[in-house]
Image (cartoon, rainbow, N blue to C red; front, side, top):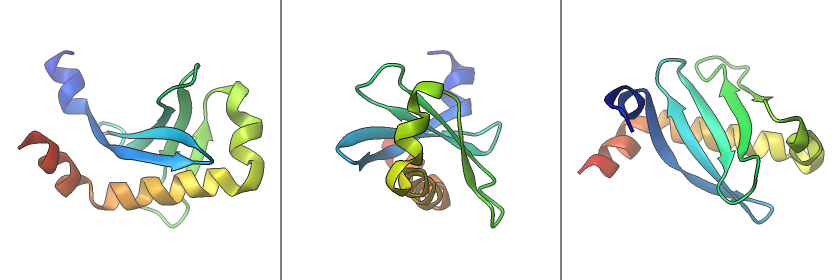
Length: 98
């Protein structure tokens, strides 16, 4: 992993939604949070944008995951978790580097 990649991406943590582990990664250059499955291919779900606004939302990039994300408010669960992790990003990232 290059220095640019390390500085531009920071793992915030993982959550579980309906039994599926999801990794949340802060994309520092976009100030957004990327959500990806840890054990499912394709792994990328999408990116949570608008984190500093009252209208944060998940932009899904893998069409294969659309039905799963839209069912049972899973999208909302991912957005809420991404917001919570994003709000604590400095502590979460600093905690992993010590």
